[in-house]
Amino acid sequence: MGKTALITGSARGIGAAIALRLAKDGFDIALNDVSERSFEDNDIMERISALGVKCEKFIADVSDYKQCEEMVKAVKETFGTIDALVNNAGITRDGLLLRMAEENYDDVIRINQKSVFNMTKLVGAVMLRQKSGKVVNLASVAGLYGNPGQMNYSASKGAVIAMTKTAAKELGSRGINVNAVAPGFIKTPMTDKLTDEQRNAMLAQIAMKRYGEPEEVASVVAFLCSADAAYVTGQTIEISGGLSM
Ligand code: NAP
Image (cartoon, rainbow, N blue to C red):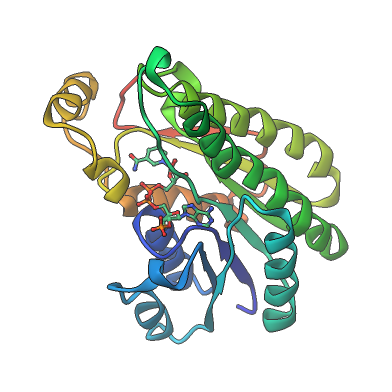
């Protein structure tokens, strides 16, 4: 195929599933995560390389502009092009508003929201020169509807949805599609941290009465990165088993 996808926070969870799926679709894969340690105890590089596509990993904290700049330069030098960017890296630091520490608010905004500015600006410049590209941002149902205990997270994901629309308007005339997905409850290390009470409360609201799998997010992201979605931009697709309708 000769196309490259860069997926942030892709050592594990939804990011790893997206990387694997895009590799199956023929993309060469630039993996990213915040530390070498993130790649320990998983075989994502081996699984992707076994598919016969090129795969390299790039260590960078995507909330840090300078590190993003160095990573994007290195990815461009390694692969020649960047055709798809998936802004997936994200964290939670949950807590009720009145008990939420200021640093937990700031960390979530920096990692979930500023990272999207950093990466879209830097990779957007590469895509502008190519006159083509796909950007997919990982938002959340929390960014659409709010969620108790997630003032920081829902603010960051609501911003990601607004940033998706703005980037789509700025870049659309240059052949660049920018979309978001808003997952509900997906089984990953991020949601493993929730209590049984929180899980059961969530399950009661889900029309399909089950949690989602990372692969079910990856397949929608793959569609948005494909030629089949050529006329889709600025949209946020909810992947929540009917959590909210
Ligand atoms: P996850 O299992 O916690 O994986 C997130 C990945 O991002 C981890 O590998 C993590 O690295 C990496 N990361 C964290 N901070 C980073 C940074 N500053 N720079 C680079 N990488 C960083 O989470 P997930 O459930 O797969 O979530 C992926 C995305 O989907 C997130 O944006 C999340 O908000 C969104 N989402 C998830 C759900 C869900 O139900 N799981 C629902 C809605 C939206 P370490 O392992 O080293 O920490």
